[in-house]
Image (cartoon, rainbow, N blue to C red; front, side, top):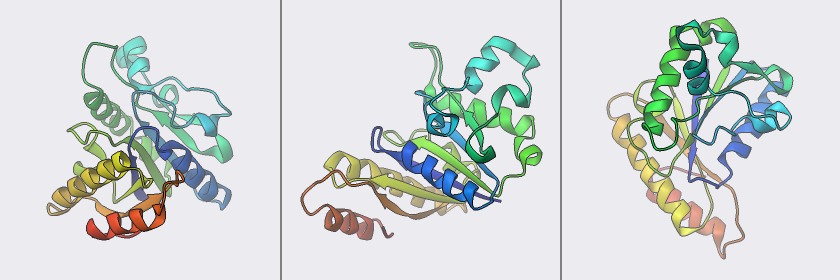
Length: 205
C-alpha cells in the first residue's frame, strides 16, 4: 500500500486532480481509497455521481461511539472507497483538529485493514499547513506528497509553504515531496514559472 497526500491552495483543482488519479488507477484494477481532508467535504463528489457523502465528524456527532466503518466509508466509481473528514460546527472548534479526529477514527475502526487499498489518496487543503492539515505529512500517514499549483502568485506561494513543511518533516523520516502537479490557469509563461518554482523547492513538475 502506498499513501499519497495531494495538497494545494483552495480552488486550485486538487480535488478534481485527485479524483482523476483515483479513477484512472481504479480502472486499471487497483484498489483505491480517497480521503477528503477539507471542511468543504466535496473531495469525493465526482466519484459519487455528484452526491456529497456524510462526513466522519458529522457522523460521529450524530451516532457517538456507536459509529461503524460502513457509516464513514462509501463505495464510489469503480469501487473506490470514499471518505470525507468534514469540519467542526461553524464558529466552534478547529478544522485541522477535525482531520486528526477523522484519521484516528479510521485507524480505530481498522479501515485500511478492512479495505486493503493498494493506493490511498489524501486530498488536503493547503492554504495553511497547521497541525491538523499537516497530519498526513507528520504522522506517518502519507509516503509521498504532491502539490497542485498554477502559475498564479498565491498558488505558488502556497505550494512553496507546503514544500517547506514537507522538507521540515522529511528530516524526521516522514513523507517526502514527490513533485508539483501543474494545473494551468492561462498565466503568461506559466509552465516556466511553475518549473522555476519547483526547481527552487528542490523538486520537479
